[in-house]
Length: 373
Image 1 (tube, one colour):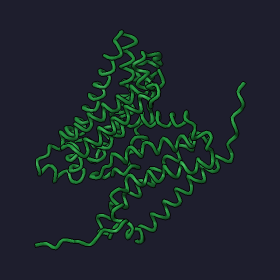
Image 2: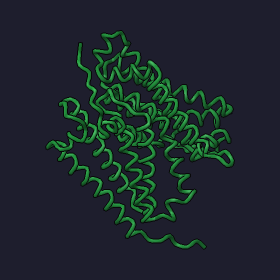
Image 3: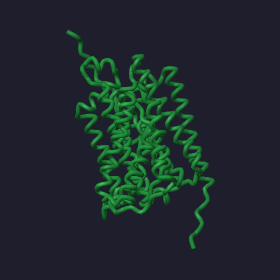
Image 4: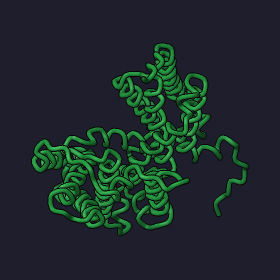
């Protein structure tokens, strides 16, 4: 018989499994506290909070699907092009061919799923690495969008489309927020309650071992990319409704934003570790951070710098955590006292300090808006 460890777990050990959600929530709290001092009147206005939710909702379906793709050691860099091409095709069906919106919308999502299927087949059947395969298909889909649109901006869509992008149930939250949260809840159920989620984690942990247990690894990967394509197409529809317009060059940075949100939320780029709640918190965190920089009137280029810094620090943290697991360190807090842990703490402090300095400088240099009229 093997001995069973009956020693009570410390508080630190109990919190460690929830670090994926605790980390982003702590950063969200830090942003709220900072903006509560720097720009409380503008940042905490109901209209601004509504903008944050609308921005986050646009990325929620893609973050849900990307969680599955990354967990199984994949990546999809084509989601921006899939969103744009799906929106363009839906717009042409409505504007040029007179399709009802309720018919054109599901067709657009099915087209997105088809593009995801193509991605999956390229990766699994032709053995093209995920990074190269989806990057190449990104060029293909973007090129097709440019060919079809011919430089046109398609605008003014039926109420069904605009409601999906920016509509609101009277006295309730905006419709896109409901749709975004619903997809995250569905993703959480898939990840935690179904074989689809279990197989995803198993494949990410060890594809060879998953194959030996009877899991159809290639087929399961294709399923994840089909889900990713459908989610990207849904985001394209939401973007079209939000702007009431679409063009071939729309959604250029979707892939970076979504991958960043998922990684910040604790899903490992090396596979086998996933957190749907963390992905939800990551989406909220990035939307709140960008909105805070806009509120402080910091230039767009510095917004990109801040987003990149958050991504780098998050990847460094979770990479260190995986290394700690492999090396057998005695818990997270014990690992922080190792040389690698100390280096990580100094690096993270430098990143956070730089972001706070950027926010502070923006708040000091911000000029009040010119009075209207």
